[in-house]
Amino acid sequence: MTKKCEEVALIVQARLSSERVPEKMIRPFGDTTLLDILFEKLGQITVIPQTQIFVSAYDEPIKQIARNHKLQIYHRSEASALEEASLPRIFEWHDMLPKQYKYVIIVSACNPLLKVSTIEGFIETYLESTEPGAFAVIPKKTYYWTLGGESLTDWKGSPTMNTKYVDTLYEAAHCLYASPLDLVGKGYWMSDTVPPRLALYPMDEIEAFDIDYEWQFRIGEKLYEDFMDSGSR
Image (cartoon, rainbow, N blue to C red; front, side):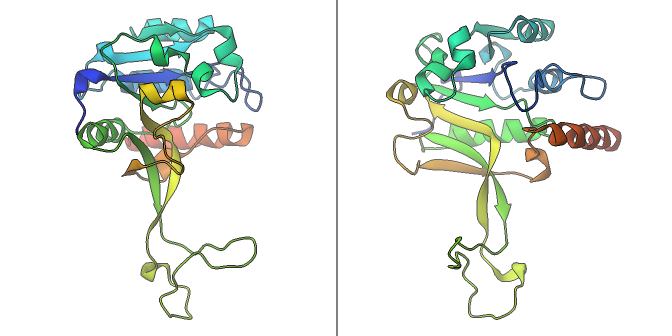
């Protein structure tokens, strides 16, 4: 069964308590910030109404940037902002959003190269999917082994390592997620099966560049400037 557009909320979950890259959401990044980059893109989204986009934040500087972009704010608790493990607490809005919402899409602000068209494509894919959750992934054609040396790749009988001839596998992109809201209170995310049953959304690897460490912040800034210069947004 497909999902109704009015049943889906899009949420940006943001906080300033990152230990590896302190205050990365609001630090100068080129001539802007990671939050401003994403919020400007969300302002161009047309596949769902802007009234269905929320920013979940506890820290006032994040809320102010959201206000600057005229986005709705879910006022996250301090306990939620500091939580690292409990899904119901991290996503405490799961049973507090308006009752019209049955599903949620989360977009990460840590991927400055993510395109508007990719965000919209993911939303459309999820709306049309019969799976409970959805996840963006990166297509990979390469060779994999376990630490014990067991091959996870079908070599198809060839002694030559030619990636053109291996099957495509899909790596987590960690930037776009979708889930039924009612699963969160039960401690599940995206699906109530392990491993989860998901609609996969393939995307370009460069768009999934994730800023999780200081060196990635510096490199990401240069990549973003190159993207801006080339018009790849």
